Amino acid sequence: MKYEISRGTLAVLPNDNNSSLVYEDDARYIIHEKPFNIMEDSCRYFGSSYEGRKIGSKSILGAEYKVPIVVEDSSNLIIFPTTSPQSEDCAWISLKRVSNIKKVDYNNTKIIFDNDKEIIVPCSFRSIENQLSRASRLDLILRNRKNS
View 1 (cartoon, rainbow, N blue to C red):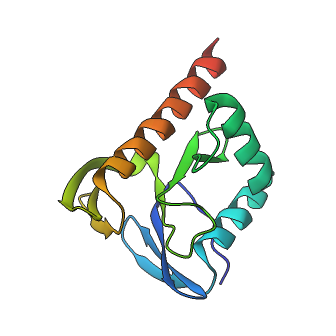
View 2 (tube, rainbow, N blue to C red):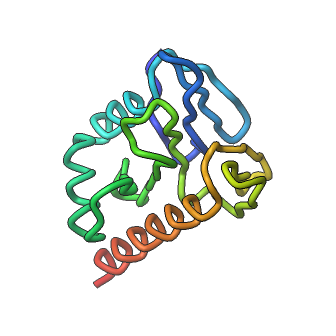
């Protein structure tokens, strides 16, 4: 089954070496693709490439690594990585669906979504906080450019 990230997507997490656990509003799926491949396929589905989206984000933010990706332009569907995108541990989180984050311990953070679903990712609170901030800044800059 091919999977394209949409507004209903909450998160795409690594499940094992060749599959992902995808959380949506009312469902959870195992997709037999790595999270990074789902990101690449979703960017292509919406008419671009992952690499092109990454270059665009880097240019707008002036950041070099772990940049958020605009998967789909018209609704500013922005997904951010929890670690290096090439890492086997990288999860992808939908910016607009996050309502809160909480520190679990030094290496784990709980992400609470706008529908009250929760996941725990193996990433420090500070790192998730930075990724949320970076993705929010990208969203704000793009919305301001579209409205000017």
